[in-house]
Amino acid sequence: MTADRTRSATERSPAAGRTGEDVRSEVLRLAEAYRADIARFLRDIVAIPSPSGREGPVVDRILEEMGRVGFDEVYRDEVGNAVGRIGTGPTTILYDGHIDTVGLGDPTAWTHDPYAGKVENGRIFGLGTVDEKAAVAAMIHGVRIIKEMGLDRARAGRDYTLYVVGTVQEEDCDGLAAGLFVEHLRAKTGRRPDLAVLGEPTDLAVYRGHRGRCEFKVVVKGRACHGSAPDRGDNAVYKMGRVLEGIQRLAPHLKDDPFLGRGTITVTRIESKSGSLNVVPDECVIFIDRRLTWGETPQSALEELRAIVTELGEPDAPGKGLGVGATGAEVALLDYDAVSYTDCPTRMAKEYPTWVTPEESPAVAAGLRAAEELFGVRPPVGKWAFSTDGVSLAGGHGIPTIGYAPGNEVLAHTVGEWVAEDDLVKAAAFYAWFPAVAVEELKRGKR
Ligand SMILES: [Zn+2]
Image (tube, rainbow, N blue to C red; front, top):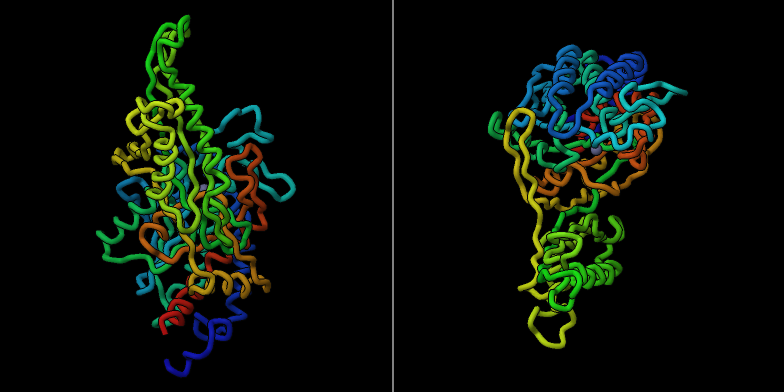
C-alpha cells in the first residue's frame, strides 16, 4: 500500500495487470464503440416531453436504461428523481443531471422539430439536448464503461460509490430536487456526497461556480378614483414608476467580483389592478430577478430594495415625492410552492445561494486531471452565467461541486439547441474515468 502512495493513477492501473495508459485507451475505445447507443438514448429521452413537474415518463425511460447498462441499484426517490447507484466504496460521488426542460415557447420558431432529435452534420438537435439530457445520457453510458471494465472494483481503498441522479423540477426551482436527494440519501444510507459533478453545459470545460439568485415582488398601494378626475385618487402605477427609477439607479452600483462578475437586478413583470380602464389603479406589482455575486445574500438584496422604497417617503409625509413609504409598499421574497409528479409537496423560499468551489480544491483538480489524462489537453476553467442545482449541493449543503458536460451554455433555453455527437462520446469517457481520479485527489487533499 505505502509503496503505491506516491504514484498517481496515470502510472498505475485501476485494474490489475494493465497500465494507466492501457486503461485510458480502453475507456476511450469503449466510449467510441457506444457512440451510436449514447446518441440513440439521448434521442429517446429528447422525444419524451418532460416539462418541470411532469417528468414521470422520461424518468421511466432513464431508469430502464440504467438497469440495462448494469447499475447495481436503480429506483425513483420520493420527489421522483431517477436514481442509479454503482459500488459501495467509502467515497461517495454524485453525478447530477436535471431531466426536466423549459417549455417549448413558439413551436414554429424552432429550426428543427424539438422532439425529433434530428441528426445533422454530427449534431443532435432538440429541446433539452444541451440543457441537459446529453449529460444524463453520457453519465449513464459512462457508468456502462465503468461496469464493463470493472473500474469500480479495481483496487482496495480506491473504490467508490457513484450515484447518477436525474433530478426533477430544476428549471422551476434550481436545487430543490437535488437537495431533497441529498436528504433522502442521508436518511437511507447515512452518506453525504464527498463531491458532485453537474451536467449543466460547460462545452467540456471545468466549471466551478456561479452567481446565486433570488426573486422578489414589490407591491405598491394607491387610492382608486374615477379616471376623469385623477387628482382625487393616488395612482399606484405612478408611484411604482419611482421605484423602477430607484432600481435602475441601483443596478450599476451592485457588488462586483473578479470571478463571478457583478450582481444584477432586473424587473421581469409588472401588473396593476383597477376596477376598469376608467379607474385610477390602487395597486401595482413588479417582479424582480436578482443575481447575487460573491458577498451578496438574499437578505442584503432585500434590504437594498427596502431602502429604495423607504427613501421614497412615507405616504403622508409632506414634501416627500409621491409617498411610496414602508406603509405604502411591501417588498417580499417569493416562495416556490408546487407538487411533484409523484405527489410530493415541494415548497421553499426562492433564494438560491451563490457558490464557488476554489480553483485549488480536489474537486477542480480531479476534473482537470481526468480530462487532461484522457484527451491530452487541460480544459479551461469557468463559470455559468445562469443558476444550477449547485445552489443546494454546494451553496446549501457545502458539497465540493464542479460542472463538466457537453453542449454550449449559450444554446440553453433557445430554439436552436444542439449538442455534438463527438462531445457526447468525450463526456461519456470523462464520466467513466473521473471517479477513480476524484478518489485520489480527495485523498491527496486530506493529507
Ligand atoms: Zn439545466
